[in-house]
Structure formats: C-alpha cells, structure tokens
Length: 185
Image (cartoon, rainbow, N blue to C red; front, side, top):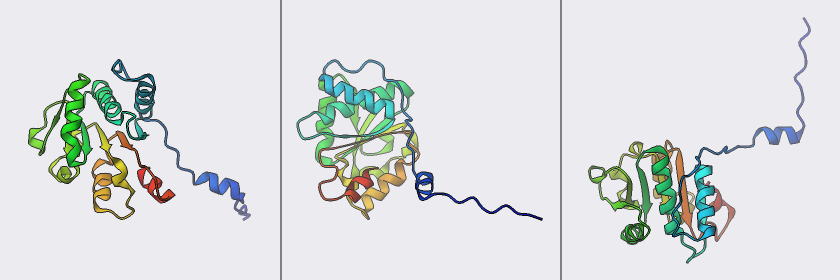
C-alpha cells in the first residue's frame, strides 16, 4: 500500500495559515447626528460598519460625541441595550453630552436600574451588570485595556466576549509599546 507523502508547505504558506481575520460584523448606520463634524460622522459610520472597532482620537477631537452617536446607531440597528463603561469621573459628563446631542442615555449603578436604551456605568461597577443583556458595548478611556495582566482588563474582556458590537475609545492607545496596542485588539 502506497501512502502519499505529506505535502510540504512553504514558510509563507505556513505563516499565512496562522493569520487571524477579523471580518466586519457591523451594520449600515441610519441617520447620524448632524451635530457632529464631518470627520466625526465618517468615523462613526466606519465604526458601525466594522461592528468591532476603536476610535483612537487625540484629546479635544470629540470621542464622547462619537461614542454616543455610535451607541445610538447600534441601539437603533439592533434594538438591544447598549452599555458604556467609563471611568467614574466621566460617567455624568457622558450623560450630559448625551443630552446636548439629543441622545437619551442614563447613568446606572446596578442592572436593576437599566431601562431600554443606552446605559452608562463605571468600571468598578461592571460586576453589578449582566452583560448578556446588552447587544453593544463602548469602552470609554479604553487605555485601561493596556495592562497585560490587569484584573479590570481581564474582567472587561471576559464579560464582553459575547457582545457582537464593541467600541473602544481612547486618546492614548499605545504610548509605550506594541503589546499595549495588542491588548486593545
């Protein structure tokens, strides 16, 4: 009985077989707030089409309005609740900017306070929420994901793994090394 010899791969074929492809999981957004600048609207539309994306925009370029517009578009598309995780000092500021842009959102401390729509909470309260009840998540000031072995980073990653639409927003994605950028991915 003749058994054919295994086919040899070139090194390039081997490396290509290891590539991870992140196909878009997003959606075509409806109307985006006219309050946004053109570049902001373009970024929001791109993030919606990707489904899993990051906005790495410097301070003062409007990350909060962009993440709110993305969250509103995700809510309108899926009809599923959206959670925005943010540092404690930013939660009420995000809620106020939502009012400015006509986007209904609410700061909550526990899952029982969640009403249909966009919920904002801080990282320290993540354990009080059932993330299976959300169809989209925004990680504001996502530089918290940079720590390779951080407990908060791991809790966020584990809790949000099943959420199809995810957006990370920060002005400082990788100031030190490529590992920090990889942690965002």
